[in-house]
Image 1 (cartoon, rainbow, N blue to C red):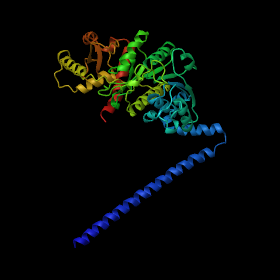
Image 2 (cartoon, rainbow, N blue to C red; image 1 turned 180 degrees about the horizontal axis):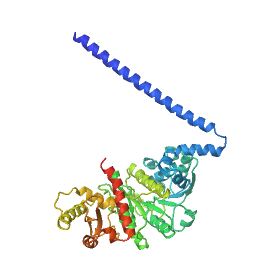
Image 3 (spheres, rainbow, N blue to C red; image 1 turned 180 degrees about the vertical axis):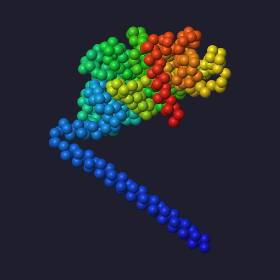
Image 4 (cartoon, one colour; image 1 turned 60 degrees about the vertical axis):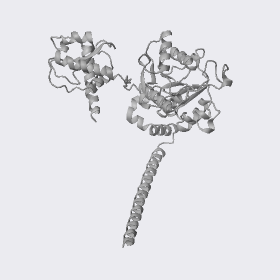
Length: 434
């Protein structure tokens, strides 16, 4: 009896497995047929048009960029496609940045690098393969880019950027320059040249010895925190008269136990063959995914800027103590200034959100970054996310003593700014509750 039962169970399981396999096979076949149908429809659509090569190319380009067209719209995509971008340094960071600029439809890209593809490059380079080892990186990328998206005008410059050749390498009025150099002296020369010649630039700091993707930030060079290369760049740029105005991709992660690899004894006091003067000979370990994230962050920032798409990078400053202090001050103000003894619906998390994402960590009135506090905008209205403003303590003291509504005291420009910020909060808050 048990034997028969076991046989029935086994047969049932086998039957179920066969049925499931058949269902999956049918679904797979149907899916493949649907894909083939879509491909035929697209091919027929192109074939039905006049055999003008430029028209065929335009149809293909629009199909490649269809998702971007859906996102940005016609006008902004035309700006991207007509743009000219230069990427200086196409290693782990720069290769991924250039790769996604190309795939996103940037019409003209100039890539600059003196180095060749090595076997050790293959863990982080965007397109290089074993067959490219020994080729100049920019040549290898140019060849691969032609296979991926032949409609981009890709210029490959096998050259080491320097202050002496800056004018020739950056000629042509680029819309943006991406600094993906890992040598600080060259990096400083590039940034200084772009700033003094009014060329838009975004810079990458060190991706080596990092592994936490959540710590990658975009901020003005003057606001960078915790990154040694960013700090050194900021300090040296200040000596050259550049205080701010340079967006930077960086990481707040501490490298921890990951250090520069030791230099072999035989190389002490010598220049490594093939390396230019002043270039490091020791190697900082690199986890391949992090340079890719840096490069994609840079490409994303540049693309939305080219399209005039609004973006406000928020540097997470990890200042929980500041939020706790602001929350404590705000609770005290509600009780002692506004005589409000009801339980507050505003939380410490809300305070951090208001302070960073709505008011960008600065006074709404003066833009000051120091001695800040939160207070009610309109004292006659109850506390809410759309009735709290960030001011310096001195500004808040005057504001809290107003005997008229804010609309009767402040000028129109400031009132419009505050109104826009509260509207922004209204739009953002719906995402916080998902």
